Image 1: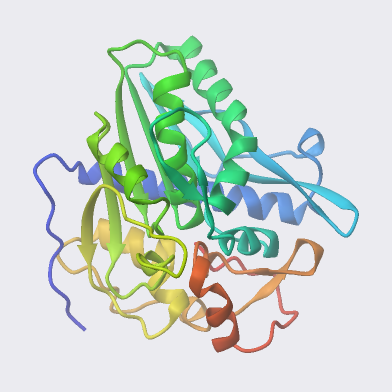
Image 2: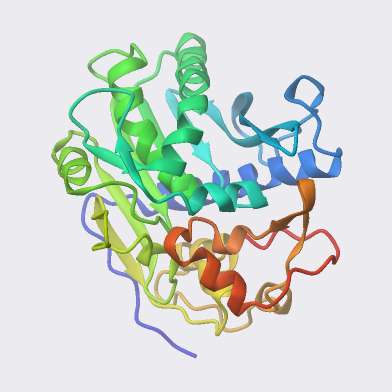
Length: 319
C-alpha cells in the first residue's frame, strides 16, 4: 500500500525528529525494565538506557496510590549530548496512566503565569515531575553548558512535554541565549485556547507529528460540554492506516517508521504483533496499553471496543 510523502516546513529538522522518536522509545524501555524488576521504588530501580551516545540523569517519576499502596512509576528522563539537553516522556502504559488521561477537566497552568488552563490529569502528573525536570536540566547545564534544549514525548508524554516547555523556559535558570525546540508525537490536545495562544506566541518552535489515521490526537474534543481545547504548534501530518487503533498510534510502527521513511510513510510489512491489539498485565492489575495513551475523552470507548482485558504475556504496544 502506498501513501503520499510527508511534507516538512523549511525549519523542521527531520534528523532531530527521528532522534526524538528514538529517545522516546528509550523511555518506553525504561518502563519495561521497571516492570520486569517488579516495579520497585526509584531508590531500588536499576535502569540501563537502551540507547548510547548520551549522558542520562535519574529517571523522572511520579507517585500514585492504589488501594492503600503507593507506587513510584518512571515516565521519562533528561539526557544530554554535546551542548544539547533532551527532556523526554513516554506515553500511557499503566492503568493509572490511563485514568489520568481521562481527567479532562481544565485547571489553571501552575508553573508560570499567562498560560491559561490545561488538562487536569496531565497537570497533576506534571506537578510532581516539574522539580525533577528542572533539576535534570540544571544537571545537564552544569555538565555541558547548554545552548539547546529539546522537549519531546509520545501520546501522554506529548502532553507532559507541552506542560514542560513554559516551565523550563521560565524556571530552569538557563542563559537567555539558549535555544529551545518542542517536538511532539501523537499529541492529544493539552489546553484551552488561551494556553494554545500563549504557546504559539512564545519563542519556542513547536511541531506536532500526527498520523491522520490516529484517533488519539482527536482527543479531548476541541469543543465539549464544559471545556474547549485547542491544539498547539505546527502540524506535521502523514497518513498510515494499519487497520488497528494500536497500529495507527504506535510509536515505532507508525511514527518512527514514517519519520524514517518520509517518502513512503506507511510500512508495507508491519509486525503482526503490533496489529493484534493485545493487552498485557501492568502494575496493580492495570492495562498495558501504550498504543492508546493519551486517549482522554475517547479512552473508555477505545477499551470497550477492544473487548475485555485479558492476562497475557507482558506487552508494551506503545512502542
